[in-house]
Image (cartoon, rainbow, N blue to C red; front, side, top):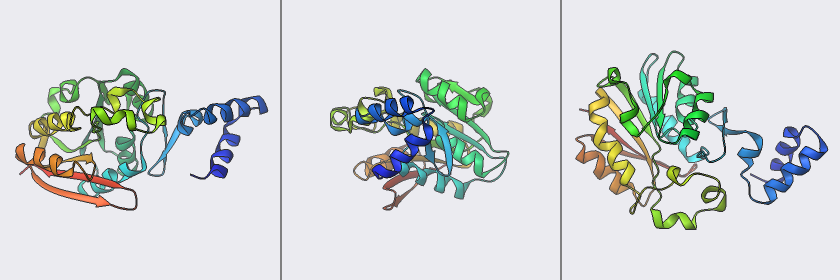
Length: 238
């Protein structure tokens, strides 16, 4: 985003000249624009954000686009490691009547996602452990933007991420695949027959992500979008 665009957004968000000065100073000090505005633009929506919670990235729109191709009205969707709940919210906006569930281990993320989704279906817990048992075997699409940054690489991330988002939202373990491995291994128990798991990954880790999906017994596909910089591994339950 150009500086002129950021300035216009801050001007619109400021209630008074003093407030504008505060916002500009905070932005100059590196506070993410989205936190100053209170929202992030994602797939045509304004998604509420909160300090420490992973801000939705433009590349994640590829997860939404591919999930859209697989869904129908009334389907059941699970947004794992949901952060703000942006993916689930974008899908719900496209499919009225969609049954969207979401979960995250970070209480701040859960509180934020409850502002963007049906609060009763946003759960706190460790991946599938958070879910009610009645969802087992009936989820049509699982979307997961699980942390996939290798632990040692976090120090090299932009300050906006490493200083303003909780480490639990970024750290994917030594190879960046630790959380993805657990997401893939647990998916078959929760997916409906023919259901699909969509996992955001990176071009460098794509082969490893696909291998995890295959080990879980899923039929795999990799999709990329150079325009948004997105990479998504898809696994379908046979």
